[in-house]
Length: 485
Image (cartoon, rainbow, N blue to C red; front, side, top):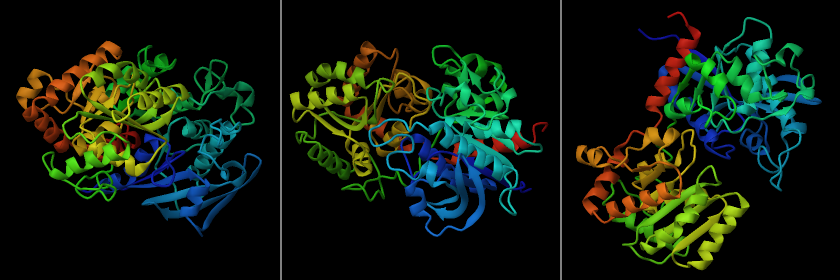
């Protein structure tokens, strides 16, 4: 028996391929297509940034409304493989820089108002602003969409069911409590059971406290954030809602991330023994000024260059890595001190350390296809996508045993190797000694070609796409619509 279709309004501040600053965009961009086979149709509400409007030229106007001191239009479009609704509000979103920062890297001072407007537009759509369409479920992603949940909770009934996904608990959107009325929130919302958090307003807390269901992006992270060491001050709230909380690991778009057909690679391949993978390694070494040494163990990093990602630990462990004869290729941007440390390391060790500050999609694919191992030493990691790409591309992931890294990489301990299940190297504690031990274990595996090839084969066979996560989201939507079943 076929199940009835479900209409979802996804609310987010970014979605690949239209606008992306991190993994949030990848999830929002990939999940709708993965849900279609389950009878679930998603319309994705995005702010009308210049890049979004450029991809949706001549989109028809569906509704007009006043938002945060100016007129806004709701547009409907098909772009980037998504069924889009766009908040076209030039006074809020038509500006250079990233979705959140100006060209100097500073937060836009009106970010609270900008993303409150996104939430208000979502609530208006949920209550029928678009002729002939209302969602069954509003699915809001991260703090930028958190107030959509609050506007629905405190607004008129009936309303759609609500789901809130937290992609990273560290980013909470806190703003002073004096802005309550300006953000269109009722006085009763400023309460410990509402949006109030440490005397201010937290859109993230609004989503966690008021949504019908909460998800995060891996089962282990869902457990970790209920404890003080990872709860970012929200652990008590999350413990009180543990029955509404679940972890669904992310996937990657296996059409975009497919080494057999990747147009961004110098050489495509379908197995770890293919000569073409060696050609990609040589191309990566050339691109980052590394010595052309096929036998050197080449570690790659594609990451934000921050303490959360453990990149300072890589700098501390670098002398041992180099003494062992390995190389390091880094692509990313982040903390200026860490960027400077990596650039100094590249200058001090020419041909052994290569660093590209910034982001380059083609180079990101080449790092995955050309590195022998990928380092992900995060102190905490809600899910992580780079290790999933590494598995797909035959780069052995070396990861901290936290969050989604623990859920997606099987450690190459003796039992897992003997069982033929290992896909990478995990380590704990997340400190210099833990990372150094992991690097030693990785070097030992590299010195045993049969074991190394087995790790690669296992990783490349891993299910890293959206099939299983989409089925779990589909069950979640049906459960939230039929809570008694």
